[in-house]
Length: 244
Image (cartoon, rainbow, N blue to C red; front, top):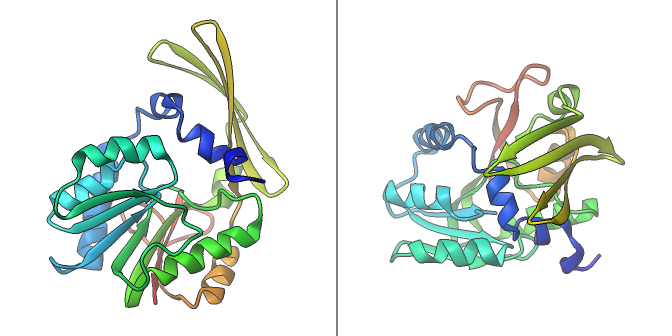
Protein backbone atom coordinates (compact mmCIF):
# COMPACT_ATOMS: atom_id res chain seq x y z
CA UNK A 1 0.00 0.00 0.00
CA UNK A 2 1.49 3.35 -1.01
CA UNK A 3 1.52 6.31 1.33
CA UNK A 4 -1.14 8.04 -0.77
CA UNK A 5 -3.53 5.15 -0.14
CA UNK A 6 -3.05 4.98 3.61
CA UNK A 7 -6.27 6.18 5.23
CA UNK A 8 -4.61 8.66 7.60
CA UNK A 9 -2.83 10.53 4.79
CA UNK A 10 -6.22 11.57 3.32
CA UNK A 11 -8.50 11.77 6.39
CA UNK A 12 -6.09 13.75 8.59
CA UNK A 13 -5.51 16.17 5.70
CA UNK A 14 -9.25 16.71 5.30
CA UNK A 15 -10.93 19.79 6.85
CA UNK A 16 -13.79 17.48 7.89
CA UNK A 17 -11.52 15.62 10.32
CA UNK A 18 -11.04 18.85 12.27
CA UNK A 19 -14.77 19.71 12.09
CA UNK A 20 -15.84 16.30 13.45
CA UNK A 21 -13.40 16.44 16.36
CA UNK A 22 -13.67 20.16 17.13
CA UNK A 23 -15.49 19.29 20.40
CA UNK A 24 -12.48 17.55 21.93
CA UNK A 25 -11.89 18.60 25.51
CA UNK A 26 -8.90 20.93 25.44
CA UNK A 27 -8.99 21.57 29.20
CA UNK A 28 -8.87 17.84 30.01
CA UNK A 29 -5.94 17.39 27.62
CA UNK A 30 -4.04 20.35 29.08
CA UNK A 31 -4.66 19.12 32.65
CA UNK A 32 -3.27 15.73 31.57
CA UNK A 33 -0.19 17.40 30.12
CA UNK A 34 0.31 19.41 33.32
CA UNK A 35 0.28 16.19 35.36
CA UNK A 36 2.63 14.56 32.87
CA UNK A 37 5.09 17.46 33.17
CA UNK A 38 5.06 17.22 36.97
CA UNK A 39 5.71 13.48 36.68
CA UNK A 40 8.43 13.70 33.98
CA UNK A 41 9.98 16.84 35.43
CA UNK A 42 11.79 18.07 32.30
CA UNK A 43 14.53 20.67 32.79
CA UNK A 44 14.03 24.06 31.10
CA UNK A 45 16.59 23.34 28.34
CA UNK A 46 15.32 19.80 27.59
CA UNK A 47 14.14 19.11 24.07
CA UNK A 48 10.66 17.60 23.63
CA UNK A 49 9.33 15.94 20.46
CA UNK A 50 5.56 15.84 19.97
CA UNK A 51 5.15 12.82 17.69
CA UNK A 52 2.04 12.92 15.44
CA UNK A 53 1.28 16.44 16.68
CA UNK A 54 -1.63 17.22 14.35
CA UNK A 55 -2.19 20.99 14.16
CA UNK A 56 0.27 21.49 17.00
CA UNK A 57 -2.16 22.53 19.73
CA UNK A 58 -0.30 20.62 22.46
CA UNK A 59 3.16 21.41 21.11
CA UNK A 60 2.16 25.05 21.47
CA UNK A 61 0.94 24.44 25.02
CA UNK A 62 4.24 22.75 25.99
CA UNK A 63 6.16 25.62 24.41
CA UNK A 64 4.10 28.16 26.38
CA UNK A 65 5.20 26.29 29.49
CA UNK A 66 8.77 27.21 28.55
CA UNK A 67 10.03 24.09 26.77
CA UNK A 68 11.90 23.63 23.49
CA UNK A 69 9.37 21.70 21.41
CA UNK A 70 9.34 20.17 17.94
CA UNK A 71 6.09 18.82 16.50
CA UNK A 72 6.10 16.36 13.62
CA UNK A 73 3.18 14.93 11.68
CA UNK A 74 2.50 13.30 8.33
CA UNK A 75 -0.30 15.75 7.49
CA UNK A 76 1.01 18.57 5.31
CA UNK A 77 -2.11 20.69 5.93
CA UNK A 78 -1.83 20.33 9.71
CA UNK A 79 1.87 21.26 9.72
CA UNK A 80 1.25 24.21 7.38
CA UNK A 81 -1.31 25.47 9.92
CA UNK A 82 1.02 24.86 12.89
CA UNK A 83 3.99 26.63 11.27
CA UNK A 84 2.26 29.99 11.78
CA UNK A 85 2.97 29.57 15.52
CA UNK A 86 6.68 28.75 15.24
CA UNK A 87 9.24 30.63 17.31
CA UNK A 88 12.84 30.18 18.38
CA UNK A 89 11.90 27.22 20.62
CA UNK A 90 8.93 25.82 18.68
CA UNK A 91 9.29 24.08 15.32
CA UNK A 92 7.09 21.93 13.10
CA UNK A 93 7.95 19.58 10.28
CA UNK A 94 6.20 17.08 8.02
CA UNK A 95 7.67 13.70 8.94
CA UNK A 96 6.72 10.03 8.72
CA UNK A 97 7.16 8.41 12.15
CA UNK A 98 8.59 5.31 10.45
CA UNK A 99 11.80 7.27 9.79
CA UNK A 100 14.30 8.48 12.39
CA UNK A 101 13.78 12.23 12.61
CA UNK A 102 16.91 13.44 14.45
CA UNK A 103 19.23 10.75 15.85
CA UNK A 104 19.57 10.84 19.66
CA UNK A 105 18.37 14.45 19.79
CA UNK A 106 15.42 14.54 22.20
CA UNK A 107 15.22 14.24 26.00
CA UNK A 108 11.49 13.43 25.87
CA UNK A 109 9.15 12.20 23.16
CA UNK A 110 5.37 12.19 23.62
CA UNK A 111 2.89 10.34 21.42
CA UNK A 112 -0.53 11.28 22.76
CA UNK A 113 -4.26 10.65 22.23
CA UNK A 114 -4.03 7.31 20.36
CA UNK A 115 -1.70 8.44 17.57
CA UNK A 116 -0.15 5.02 17.05
CA UNK A 117 -1.14 1.69 15.46
CA UNK A 118 -2.40 3.15 12.16
CA UNK A 119 -0.36 1.00 9.80
CA UNK A 120 -1.87 -1.94 7.93
CA UNK A 121 1.25 -4.03 8.34
CA UNK A 122 2.06 -4.77 11.98
CA UNK A 123 5.80 -4.67 11.22
CA UNK A 124 5.42 -0.97 10.41
CA UNK A 125 4.36 -0.27 14.00
CA UNK A 126 7.61 -1.83 15.20
CA UNK A 127 9.54 0.16 12.57
CA UNK A 128 7.85 3.35 13.81
CA UNK A 129 8.69 2.58 17.42
CA UNK A 130 12.32 1.76 16.62
CA UNK A 131 12.61 4.99 14.60
CA UNK A 132 11.13 6.92 17.55
CA UNK A 133 13.62 5.31 19.94
CA UNK A 134 16.35 6.34 17.49
CA UNK A 135 15.46 10.03 17.98
CA UNK A 136 15.68 9.72 21.77
CA UNK A 137 18.86 10.48 23.72
CA UNK A 138 20.22 7.59 25.82
CA UNK A 139 18.40 7.85 29.15
CA UNK A 140 15.59 9.82 27.47
CA UNK A 141 11.91 9.01 28.03
CA UNK A 142 9.05 8.21 25.68
CA UNK A 143 5.36 8.45 26.60
CA UNK A 144 2.82 6.54 24.49
CA UNK A 145 -0.83 7.22 25.26
CA UNK A 146 -3.15 4.61 23.72
CA UNK A 147 -6.72 3.49 24.34
CA UNK A 148 -7.31 0.49 26.60
CA UNK A 149 -8.30 -1.73 23.69
CA UNK A 150 -10.25 -4.36 25.67
CA UNK A 151 -12.46 -1.75 27.34
CA UNK A 152 -12.85 0.24 24.11
CA UNK A 153 -14.10 -2.84 22.21
CA UNK A 154 -16.42 -3.80 25.09
CA UNK A 155 -18.09 -0.35 25.00
CA UNK A 156 -18.00 0.21 21.23
CA UNK A 157 -21.05 2.15 19.98
CA UNK A 158 -21.92 0.42 16.70
CA UNK A 159 -23.78 3.34 15.10
CA UNK A 160 -24.38 7.00 15.87
CA UNK A 161 -25.07 10.32 14.20
CA UNK A 162 -23.50 13.66 15.10
CA UNK A 163 -24.31 17.07 13.72
CA UNK A 164 -21.34 19.43 13.79
CA UNK A 165 -21.27 22.83 12.05
CA UNK A 166 -24.32 21.88 9.98
CA UNK A 167 -22.86 18.58 8.76
CA UNK A 168 -24.58 15.33 9.76
CA UNK A 169 -21.87 12.71 10.32
CA UNK A 170 -23.01 9.06 10.27
CA UNK A 171 -20.52 6.95 12.20
CA UNK A 172 -20.25 3.15 12.27
CA UNK A 173 -17.79 1.23 14.43
CA UNK A 174 -16.68 -2.38 14.46
CA UNK A 175 -13.75 -4.74 14.81
CA UNK A 176 -12.30 -6.19 11.61
CA UNK A 177 -9.25 -8.43 11.27
CA UNK A 178 -7.50 -7.08 14.33
CA UNK A 179 -8.44 -3.42 13.73
CA UNK A 180 -10.97 -1.14 15.37
CA UNK A 181 -12.61 0.45 12.34
CA UNK A 182 -14.68 3.63 12.29
CA UNK A 183 -16.53 4.55 9.08
CA UNK A 184 -17.58 8.18 8.73
CA UNK A 185 -20.14 9.10 6.04
CA UNK A 186 -21.70 12.51 5.37
CA UNK A 187 -22.92 14.91 2.72
CA UNK A 188 -21.69 18.48 2.21
CA UNK A 189 -22.86 20.84 -0.56
CA UNK A 190 -24.51 17.95 -2.38
CA UNK A 191 -21.33 15.86 -2.40
CA UNK A 192 -21.10 12.51 -0.59
CA UNK A 193 -17.99 11.71 1.47
CA UNK A 194 -16.81 8.55 3.17
CA UNK A 195 -13.72 8.20 5.33
CA UNK A 196 -12.38 5.41 7.46
CA UNK A 197 -10.26 5.28 10.59
CA UNK A 198 -8.39 2.06 11.27
CA UNK A 199 -6.43 1.57 14.47
CA UNK A 200 -4.85 -1.77 15.27
CA UNK A 201 -6.45 -3.34 18.35
CA UNK A 202 -3.17 -3.41 20.27
CA UNK A 203 -3.19 -4.84 23.76
CA UNK A 204 -0.71 -4.46 26.58
CA UNK A 205 1.16 -7.65 25.60
CA UNK A 206 1.56 -6.38 22.00
CA UNK A 207 3.16 -3.18 23.24
CA UNK A 208 5.43 -5.07 25.64
CA UNK A 209 6.68 -7.13 22.70
CA UNK A 210 7.28 -3.96 20.64
CA UNK A 211 9.16 -2.32 23.53
CA UNK A 212 11.45 -5.32 23.81
CA UNK A 213 12.30 -5.18 20.10
CA UNK A 214 12.92 -1.40 20.27
CA UNK A 215 15.09 -1.89 23.40
CA UNK A 216 12.96 0.41 25.51
CA UNK A 217 12.53 -0.25 29.22
CA UNK A 218 9.03 0.08 30.66
CA UNK A 219 9.05 2.42 33.66
CA UNK A 220 5.34 2.78 34.41
CA UNK A 221 1.84 2.28 32.99
CA UNK A 222 -0.96 4.71 33.86
CA UNK A 223 -4.63 4.01 33.20
CA UNK A 224 -6.11 7.46 32.66
CA UNK A 225 -5.36 11.17 32.29
CA UNK A 226 -5.26 11.55 36.09
CA UNK A 227 -2.24 9.19 36.01
CA UNK A 228 -3.82 6.52 38.21
CA UNK A 229 -2.31 3.00 37.89
CA UNK A 230 -3.39 0.91 34.89
CA UNK A 231 -6.08 -1.71 35.42
CA UNK A 232 -6.79 -3.89 32.38
CA UNK A 233 -10.50 -4.21 33.13
CA UNK A 234 -11.32 -0.72 34.39
CA UNK A 235 -8.86 1.76 32.85
CA UNK A 236 -9.79 3.94 29.86
CA UNK A 237 -6.21 4.36 28.65
CA UNK A 238 -2.82 2.65 28.54
CA UNK A 239 -0.22 5.37 29.10
CA UNK A 240 3.23 3.82 28.84
CA UNK A 241 6.31 5.59 30.18
CA UNK A 242 9.49 4.16 28.65
CA UNK A 243 13.18 4.80 29.05
CA UNK A 244 15.94 4.33 26.49
